[in-house]
Amino acid sequence: MQLGLRQIVFMLVLLAMPLAAYYFVFMPRNRQIDEARREIQQKQEKLRQLETATRTVDDLGEQIDKLTETIRVFEEKLPAEREVEVILQQVWELAAKHRLTPRSIRTDKPCATSQYTELPIKLIIVGNFDGFYSFLLDLAQMRRITRTPKMKLVKLNGVEGQMQADMMLSIFYEAQTADRPGGGGESKS
Image 1 (cartoon, rainbow, N blue to C red):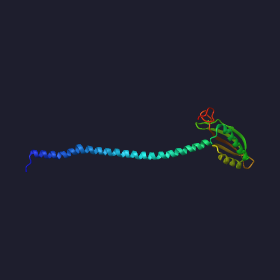
Image 2: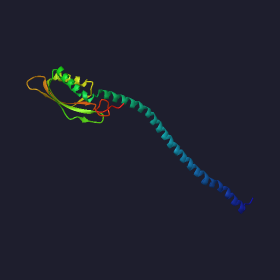
Image 3: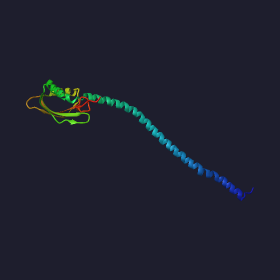
Image 4: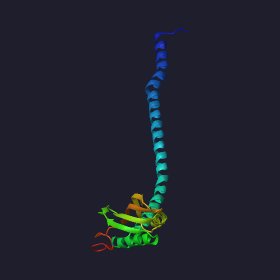
């Protein structure tokens, strides 16, 4: 069997068709499939992240409820502005209970924030150290929020166990404003 020019061209065309199909059809389609797989992987990763975020949203709701309850408890501990004198009286009575002598009680300028006001009080107390220690313990157990940012203890000469305490006591209270019940203006309903 002899091959002529026609048969050789026909054979070459037959061999070129699969190569052309691979080059022009299958290669671009494979690129599209690879790109689609990458997009699917990216979207699956975003779905995993979304599922994780969704799980934490439920936890955040619970935490918000807990924090709201904590805020409510602290707000209960904030006395109204008119009750500050009562707290000062309680501090004075605590000092007397532990046989301490308050030499000086002086209030500084109140520091206001959006939710509360801090009233610094400078105290000078003289007495027995054991009584002063008990006074501090009782002060920490008070129902209202207080803190002691500064304290200086000085031993008094000549008497064993006697001391003088120069301390700063901060009392926190709820400032009375026009938009809060019990404030200077009308209360909201």
